[in-house]
Length: 388
Image (cartoon, rainbow, N blue to C red):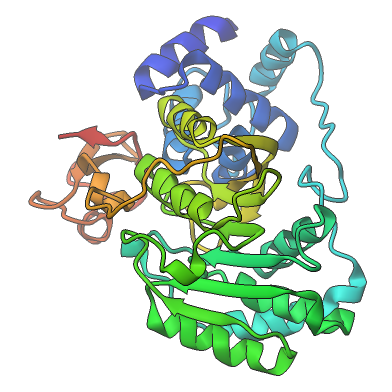
């Protein structure tokens, strides 16, 4: 079995921006995790779920990936992949933390329960604002990362957007320590009044004062929030423009001395987009202290495999925002989307149908309800998006 040729063919068939290296990442992820759901393979390979699903379908045609679900290699495929990868599967990531560098101690079980209650009652995520709520474990892990980085006690902390309720987690953690005054200042900026109201209600019993500011970050920060913070945490829209804008507002909020902290969550993107974001980070005078892949886990964020990376950035003497005034350009994923349709392949006869606005099947549910026009099947696999 010629894995190298198959990798070349599949990369071309799927149109993967990462090229052959992306297909090899998928194969490596399957090798160490099999049998595994496509979502888990996508998380390990740091690629979008639909792309991984399409690649696996192409690998099935070539006898490398088995036709059974969850995803696994065929016997011959496993031997061939092992041969080109230097041996049998070996997973070196920490088994306790999954490579995230944070382990939640059992002593925080009570805090986790309270945060779960808060999460269960919070306003629903707004997809038009690229909102997807993170898990309770991620909320606590972010707070522990702040704690380990000495970016919590005695610090002035600003959250730019907080549908993840990290302010509630910070306040709850301080209360668990029995030292609510350990947080010098805690402020939240968000456009959603319901989110701000819920944060205020949940944090009220902790003894930690939380400043709640309703503000659209397309506008410059209010003067009271400029140049006064030690730490900013943000999980912006997963677009280059969103990263540049939210990081610019973060820089504007920080005290103008080196060594201030920015904790920035951002999903794995195409190579050119990742490069653009990292160039923006450098251009703003922010130094990357660490980057933890897959640190954040989300509920229902299927396209990105339900995870995003966590950057820990520190300011330098040359720090300056890229965006200073009002911003009026595209910001959210829907604003920048240049695709309107996605092809789906019938799981039975392999016929392909386009699903999207204005077509015969405007949504995948319509195709599933109608069944495959060729064979009547009701199972369809997503393929790479179709550019308009």
